Image (tube, rainbow, N blue to C red):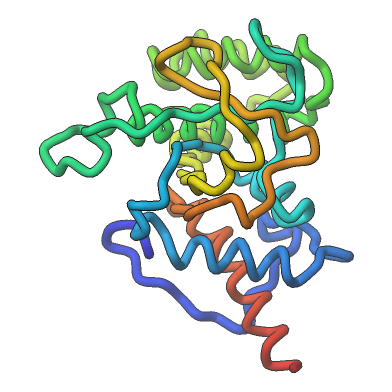
Length: 249
């Protein structure tokens, strides 16, 4: 499990701390981190157990390793109160080598786009020092990500970043990081639906949702795939934490 042209590094000296772009792990149960690492190592190989596809960010995974599962949306949607997770159901194109998943809006391709969008969106919220609980911040950042997808690092995008509190000297670096964000692809296990029955999402027929106010435990996840180098580096930091813990016995 690794991005193209990148070999995994098993660096026992790696540490997961905020100075390296990772979370501070004080008080985080090693079992949570171990479960996350195991799911990343499993990847997407267990196709028969895939009930749905989800995509999310590094920031959301930092929360997941603390929680022991995938946190739900904290925001209300048009047809859902806070506490829901949204997914794309499987599609015939999911493992079709002829399909350009970057252009697909269904199944795996749709979740990949959702992962990239969330990755950029959550990055801007955190780096801009914006409160995740403020719906106005979410709306402003969503608009910026939408414009960034259509225009790239244009003057308009730079102006919007300035309005979000980014200084001129930080914008270039932030745009580079924003472009690199790809997010995590997550597959939900069929067994999860036994406990959390799915219902129509925002677009009936295109997505589904489940109500998990306390998060979806890692036991309900079939596999996780980091889609970019930043996400893969986060996995490696978690992997190093597990390896260090195993050496200590």
